[in-house]
Structure formats: structure tokens, C-alpha cells
Amino acid sequence: MSEEQPGFALPEERRDTPLYEQMKFEIKARIERGEWPTNHRIPSENELVELLGVSRMTAHRALRELASEGVIIRVQGRGSFVAPKKRSASVADVRSIADEIAERGGLHSAELVLKQAEVCDHDLADRLEVAAGTTAFHSVIVHKEDNLPIQLEDRFVNAEVAPDYLESDFHSITPSAYLSSIAPISRAEQFVEAVLPQPWECRLLAIAKSEPCLQVRRRTWSGDRLVTSVRLLYPGSRYSLESSY
Image (cartoon, rainbow, N blue to C red; front, side):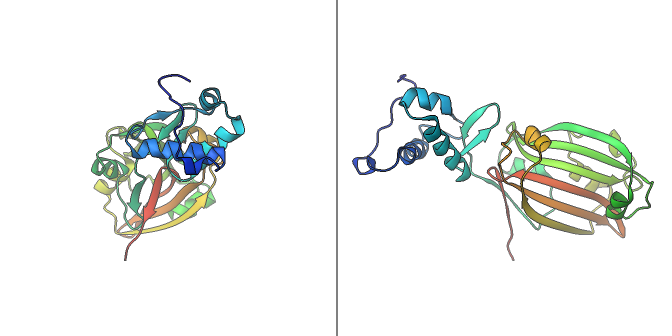
């Protein structure tokens, strides 16, 4: 074993527990002791196999269960990292994701995937409360906190309410903040559910196909006019929604 990744030192009373449980205990202990701080890269499955002489199945189970418990984050193509305290937001609020991140002391960045005009079919026209054939604006953006994807925003906008939407720089202002500035929200509706992401969503969020996600579908109005219909997708291991009454 290398000096950088010393062998696991386990309490005697845990010697009879399954090896994957021993590995989980030691990883958690190192995190709690501060040896592995938030965002620290932990050994990969291959490295654990080589360092500890365990089977790939044992290493995979230990890391999989730690990820499901929210102890680590597995970022596709990058490795496994010590998870920060899970981000959260009130389910009742309509806020800019950039403001949420700033309040936590994080750094917001945005990856613009799509920004274009589209002609509304009957389904989209119903969602935006406009006539079929009307032009609407469509944007897809990945929002990141400290360079880690935490929200995929798939948004349609009523072009008559926000005619300059496509001219906006969504690296410097979020769509939510921009739309609120030109058409203050008077009413909102939203629905929250657990879903499995589609392959293209997994790629953009850098998550596994089996990663459960929280999906929020939201529509907002300004006065009596519907402004936007948006679908927000959050990796379940990186985010939670809260509510209080």
C-alpha cells in the first residue's frame, strides 16, 4: 500500500463485520476526523482493489452505499468525492439558484446548452396559455455550485411577455432573476416528484443512470399572463427540497 493511502485501521469489535461495512466505517471515520475534507477525492474502485486487495464487488458496494447515504458524491468521469452538506431550498420559494448558492458561500456558474426560438405545438401552447403556432423561447442551462452540477433547468418562455429573452447573457444573470425583473411574479404553481434521469440529462449532470433525481415542474404568472413553464432537475444525492408551515 502507498503512503498516501494507508491501510484501514479498524476497531477490534468490527473485525467480524462484512468487509464492505469495514470500508464504509473507515471512510466515514476519516471524513469525521477531518482527514478527508469536503470535495476531497477518495480512492476509486480500482484503487481500493489494488490498495486493499479486496474484490471489485466489495469496493463497488461500499462506494455505492456511501453515495446513496449522501456521504460521498460520485461524479461520472471524475471519481468519488467527500460530499458537502446537502444543499437545500424551500419548496415554497421561487428564487434564483445563484442567490441560493451565494447564501451558502458557494460560487455559481452556468453552462448554456440551448437557447432558441420554437413554434408551440398544442401541448406547449396549453402549458404557456398561448395559441398553437405562437413563437416561444426555449433554454436549457446547467447550474453549478463550485463547478459541481446541481440543477438542470429546461425552460420555455412566453415570447410576448419577454421579447428580449434570447438576448440575455445567462452566464451573468439567471433566467429566473431576469424574468422576475421584467415581469414580477404574482402567482406560481409547482409539482415535485422523484424521477430517474434520461441519458442526456445524466451526461449534463455528470451522474449515473441509476441516480434518483428530484424534478420540479413550475409555472409562473405576472398579473394574468403566464410568463414561463420550467422543469428543474436536481441530483438526489446533491440536493433536497424543504417545506415549513
